[in-house]
Image (cartoon, rainbow, N blue to C red; front, side, top):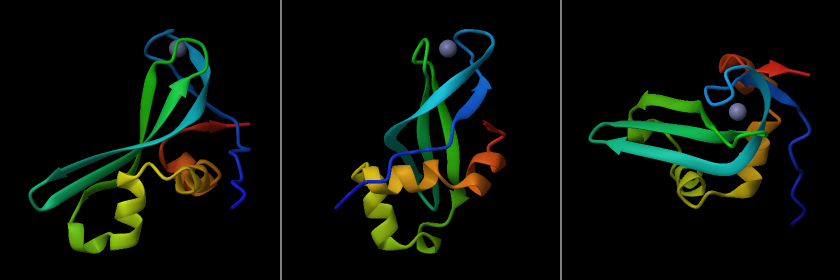
Length: 100
Ligand SMILES: [Zn+2]
């Protein structure tokens, strides 16, 4: 299956560089399951210094509310899913990304 790579350029203030930088989609997720609450992030990295920035997909969400197949894709670091989020303008804006 052909993967559509992220086409949206994302800028954010980098904690490593101390200024606004371009961030790139790492294609990886971070999942934190804590009892009845799940957090899922998509990890971006500063193009310059590789400092990571986690963009929230789910925050303190009940496990039942996340479709099982989608949850498995997060755990597998499914690239296709990562790039879908990377092209989702609403998702990026919600995370205060500056788009160009
Ligand atoms: Zn940086």
